Length: 196
Image (cartoon, rainbow, N blue to C red; front, side, top):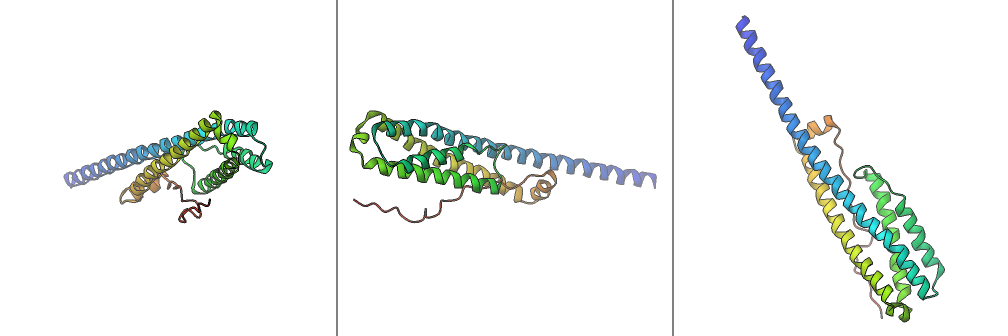
């Protein structure tokens, strides 16, 4: 009887140790994936910050070279201020992501209006400073798209891993929450109209 109890005790302890090791492996994997998402998010914030830093220079160049609609300039400045208010610890929650995306879309819209207004001023387009800033802004917009894609890929890898069994059980125990994705802007499925 004693030997049987010792055998069952040893088996139980062995199973507990194996379960703990298995859980630790899943935890460590989720931690690594979550850090990847946070790193990708930091890069998204980095390129958005680059864009926000370029805007005052672009606005100053446009303002100095042309007398154009005041509300367009004010919309850009106001949208940039809202974008500058976002501050997250790690990747944002779905609600924070929605607000962040809304503010970024407002800034993109204001910049588009600014560039349309600039099209009316051929002298402004000819200035070297404006061409330089416009090129930098276009490059930054491309970087934003690339980093948003990379973030979504990292979030997808993390979300997939945390939803798979048995990681889903441990993810709930360890408090690993789902990461939000960037969504397409409303109307992105429609081709832009180009008129001359």
